Image (tube, rainbow, N blue to C red; front, side, top):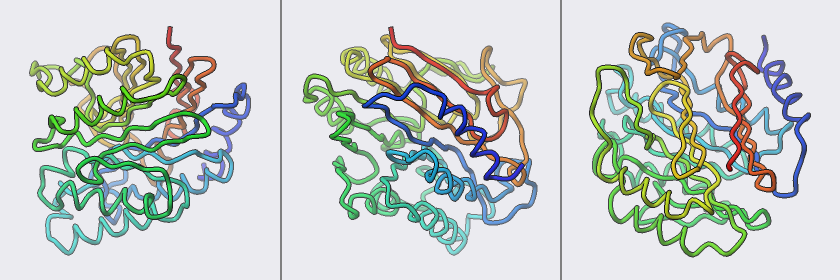
Length: 314
């Protein structure tokens, strides 16, 4: 099926949804783990997955997105990107793909973006998030552009994008948690926050891995619970499976993206699909309607409507 056909199939489901004045629509991709050639299109890390970014720009002509969300893990951990020239070529191609749009693009730093030492959080933010600020979008950064928030003022929605590789592959440092709490607390009445992050703060782990959450993630969960009345949803990648969770009544989603995981390691209730990225794609179209307290995740690509998800905040 062509990219255009995949987009149209998802758009038909979107078009059938009830529209509301504050409806938020954005595409979500994660864990591309890309190289710049296709060695094995069905094997994570042995394929060029950057074409899904180009597909988002094509889909924008139909959906008219508010912004684009990329939850990280670009591919810096792979053998084909270990040499500096190869890493730079990947990062340049990745950034150029995102730069095709005038819409805001928010990219979260993943654990593999952090712990392979190819670029600092500052460099990551400068490369991927600063361009949207320079185009005039209402972005506020933390101590560096690897995290911050985007204000969509006409819709009264604040989009936080976090860096869960702050000093370690899976944590939020205290400065970032204080930033998050301060800018949640200051939200005016009627505003809604949405949280984007690579690492998931849920408690499910792969079978055989009993390690608990980092203490910073325990604190993050407390912040979520404290401000649950003004947070509409949490969106994560990293785990390489689809899953759902709830923190203080806030709906949370994990998207498996392009990463691999052994089927025998999947925790109960989680899903992952091996697929050939030269034949299809995997993106989520996120639709949040604050007036209905409802989130729809529409799958664009593998599994199509069978992978759609819904959450209603009670």
